[in-house]
Structure formats: C-alpha cells, structure tokens
Length: 144
Image (cartoon, rainbow, N blue to C red; front, side, top):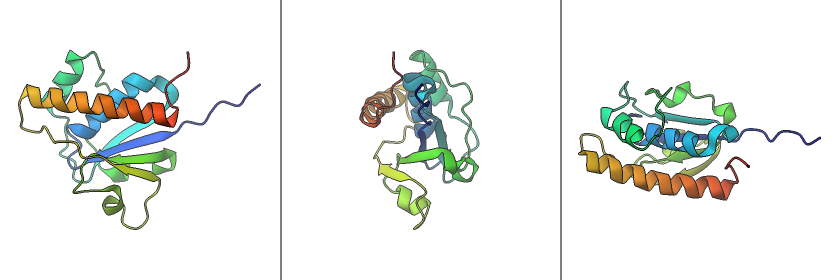
C-alpha cells in the first residue's frame, strides 16, 4: 500500500489580504480540492474581504467560504512549501527578511481594490491562469 502524499501548502500573500491573495486562495482551493493546503495573508491586513472579491468569486461559482483577512503571522508556516507574493513591491524575501521559510515566487498582479467589477474580473482571469499553471507545474491537481 502506498503512503498518502503529504500536503504541499501554498501561501498567497499581498498587502491587505482583501482582494488578490484571498481570490488566489479561493481559486486554488476550487481547482485543487483537498490535494493541497491553501492559505492567504497580508503584510498589513485590512480586516475584511472586499465585496468585489466575494462578488466575482460567486459569479464564477468559486466558494469564498472560510476566507478572512489575516496577517502572515497567523499562517502555520510549517505547513507551507511555497509562498507566492502577488505584489512586486513586497516580494516574499522582503516580507520574511532573510529567513524565507519556503520556496518562493513573486507575481505582479494588479490590485483591484476600489476598482470596477471589470477590474475584479480581469484579476480573477489572471489569477485563474497563473494558479492553474502553478498547480500543473507542481503536480498538485487531484487525480481522478
């Protein structure tokens, strides 16, 4: 009998943890199911998920259940194997100083906060494409 593959945690971070990173978290959960532990956090969380984020996710049938705005200190980093920063001005290396706790990637994703529903749609489309590519590359899509 084969041992079950350990979960590979992914942490998406941005500044306020209100738009981009929770959107990426929800998309990743939607696409990968239980095959990966997914988290999001911010370096200066605003304390709530933007209404535009919740609306665009709902319009695309992606659950926002369990999403909340939180600080990077609240994430169980021992479960994280990959950290993705969605803000070039805050690369992972800057967030964690010289002690980056996992592999890291830095994506440049526009921030839709305060924007139109079209802005949220654009960001959702970008994130769907990038998260899909990430999951394929990492071999994290559920089998079957």
